[in-house]
Length: 402
Image 1 (cartoon, rainbow, N blue to C red):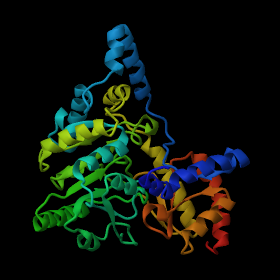
Image 2 (image 1 turned 90 degrees about the vertical axis):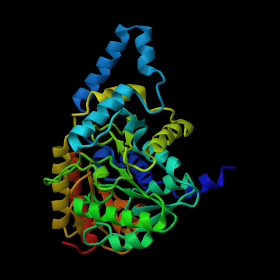
Image 3 (image 1 turned 180 degrees about the vertical axis):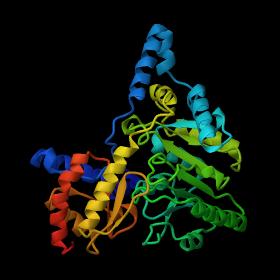
Image 4 (image 1 turned 135 degrees about the vertical axis):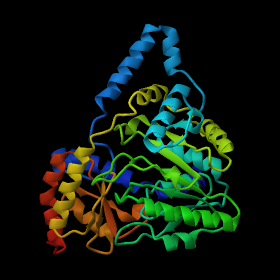
């Protein structure tokens, strides 16, 4: 029999992944061109050419060195990753965001998910609480549960989907060990602006003093570079010294399957050296050992590259304008590649199921801790959005919109 922990995980299995599988089945039945799958945040833009070139160059360079080159490229290294890769990332962050990192502040990880898990293993004890701002990426539940911590949900402002800071302050307790911030946000696409971050930091500082222990802000940043309408990329360590950053190249370089990212720990964080060593040890003891060696070297050569943000911006405008014209209520995304739409009926499960009748695959808001809404991932082809509009029009008619 499987463990009780896994039994519970099976009960709460990802609605996003389940919808993705259902979409594949529908595509086989009706034809992929007749199914409009907005379920999974799988990048629609290819990795930059420079990334593929870098991989070829690395392999050629290894071949030129013979067996020694192959062993060097594909072998073990420090649990924190290759020193030259970490140095390159640190220097890039310093140039872009005015940080003062060097290689020892960076730990290479198996994507952002691996990064969050090694952070949590390092800072969480059983019974600790991790605060999240709803709506939030549903896997946070499992990441906290992996270390017997409880997830505490803070309500959003339902007009703007910015966090309700009064509710945030009210939910911080003696057991609070961390807050997860994800901006640009999955699933809403909203960005927490500098003033919001300053207010969050002030509340955390106040509560740290009140309870006499550190509270960490864990910044989950896979969408950092995907911003629109003049919004600027931000790096949250400047607001609050106890900030730990988890990053992934999955979206910025369209590499979700390669599982490559990093954690950044600033020197000013409390117990920074213990945090860094603990995160390195957690990389090993959780079984990651180290981030993929070839991909570490490849991304280090592509730190100035970026996915085609204009492609997603076009999709964003096309989808938002099309849906609002049909009478749907949507939050206009400022970043990432998701659109958050209010269900025309209280039970969004009914709305999601109605959408399936028109081959529209939407993810229920309850999966993100915020029922009554649905998420659409617009990291799809332009044609998918164009071709989906008649289906959305039929769905709008069902609910008397327009």
